[in-house]
Image (cartoon, rainbow, N blue to C red; front, side, top):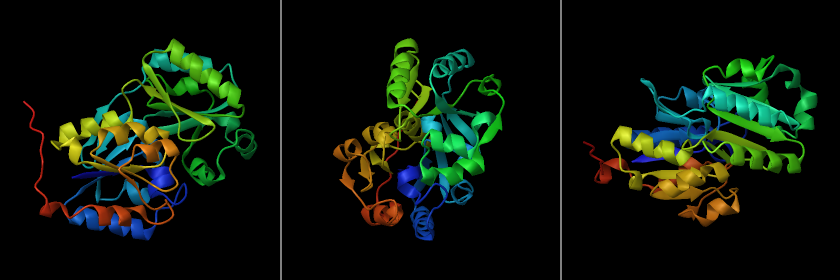
Length: 281
């Protein structure tokens, strides 16, 4: 059985912190025969080291499903935004006042001129997210410089809600090969069409020869919806958005109360269950 969890607002207590209790539960679940996966909107290199280098976590779905990484093998599935489309997105975003991050080559890039405390406040970056932002972002003179190979995802913060909705409308109407979602009240997350957590989870299951209907997932926000619809069982944390709770199999504890211990109570050890497999030609 694959157990996949979101990070921010779910497995993580804060932008950089995962509890020792959660880490111990992850270890026990892996030892009991389950396959552990992360499914996050973050790109690869901004995942906290305690999880990124955790041998008990076999798969990482990152940048909202733009890529799937298998420990020991590297990227096994990807669907990124092509360079021409990425440049077009930057052109649209340039018409608004934004704090734009481009995820490319497993790294989150930002404009160096806006990589400062004044800009963080101006664009209302969630204070809980700032420690991770300060730690992992790479400032560049121009975001156009980092999209020569395309982009995994754009994470865009807006000061003005009206500009946010106008950018959403323009991107959806102009680029039919893109998908737009969000995980915060003032951001947009832009990926290639077909690149979402649900599609990536399906690809992971196909490559791992696992049955998607046996998957257990948990999350908290809109960018987890596709994963919830794809998996056999989906649990919303108590701090999740209402939309996610409505389509969940149930609501568990909050992200400050060790969610993996709750998941551990909800799933039996893998060796006690017959293993369902997908056999492909």
